Length: 106
Ligand code: SF4
Ligand code: SF4
Image 1 (tube, rainbow, N blue to C red):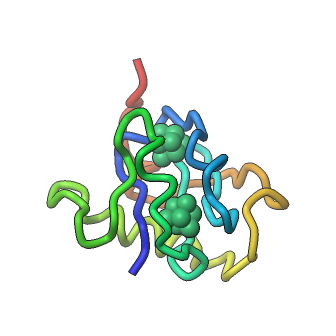
Image 2 (tube, rainbow, N blue to C red; image 1 turned 90 degrees about the horizontal axis):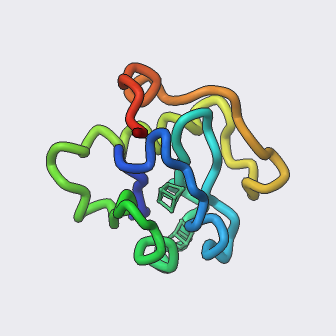
Image 3 (cartoon, rainbow, N blue to C red; image 1 turned 180 degrees about the horizontal axis):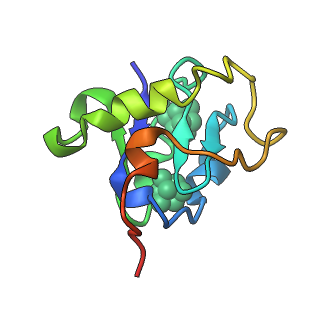
């Protein structure tokens, strides 16, 4: 099990969640952040601080955003398990589900 970042983060990315994560497993893509499914320890610290309620426990992800579980997992297909997001910084790409979205922010 893991936590998942869903659509409300796209084009918002205020990064409040990153500050809370004790294992540095929230990675920054071009338009969204992504939680590493194997590095996340399910502590839940990130979920309440997200101002747009983008973070869900895997099983509690709303039906309309179920694809985001896959997006968070597949984002790491090429990266593997880097063991820490801060050393990577911005990763200049997104999962195709997110890359295909029209601009979300006002
Ligand atoms: S706190 Fe929410 S909106 Fe901000 S970066 Fe994290 S998931 Fe995205
Ligand atoms: S649940 Fe905990 S370990 Fe997982 S991403 Fe959120 S803060 Fe990090």
